[in-house]
Image (tube, rainbow, N blue to C red; front, side):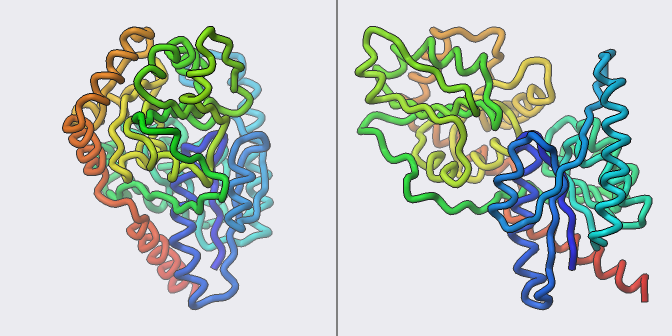
Length: 364
């Protein structure tokens, strides 16, 4: 059994694929000690270190992005995509996978197309409310399309699409994980795997007020920490902790939080929903994240705030009101958890097994 996973650039496409791998590997290792996995990702994304910790071999290919608007970078990126296709073609020929699994991300597009050319079946997973261009392209070449939300079923061919929920990976906390910071309630701020400068700035502007009534754990993104220079720095130092990125510690840190301020990337929202965490959702403006945030808010599963209408006073008041209302937080967390029909990834694993069995029978 050989499988290729493809995705990267951000944690959005990485987390569900890791979850699938964690379910798939034990099933095949019981019967076949030769189970092998290879990850095809980006050269400079966040995925390489995380993937290799899971014992998955990693290879990078050239990755380009096709934008839905005029941009001179589209011209350069077309050549990157073509190069990525030939690189993927070579890798697939050598590795000889039984199946390819992707979850969005433009690095996966040439991989799935190369697999189709070589008659290797692919499964793609759609997480977001709005299907991304990468998944729209790959859907034409995929054997199956799995979706996290029932609202996404209509976006793909009925003969291919299956509702599966969104799988959550298992992580083992390190011994130096972030611990409790005192008796005050704790607010966790997640700006996405690469950080969110606008959200970071808003938190830094609000620290003096926020730390009067809560502790803050702030995931800023890699290389985006900032030295805090304020008159009441000592109080802030005791009640504010910033960290650039969390992998193994993310679930234990989420578990500490009484409230979470987050972007609207679906992987992060899924992990928070799994843990029933009440959230203030501040999506990236004019992006697919806005549809995610609107969908969660419509289900009563989060408080949606628009970044361009948000200031320090409004944020502080909203955080304070929610921390003072335990029942509201419980309601938000409970409805978050009910957004997805499944978190285990077992349905996707069963689909992968069926495709591999069908392919084996077809080759006999």
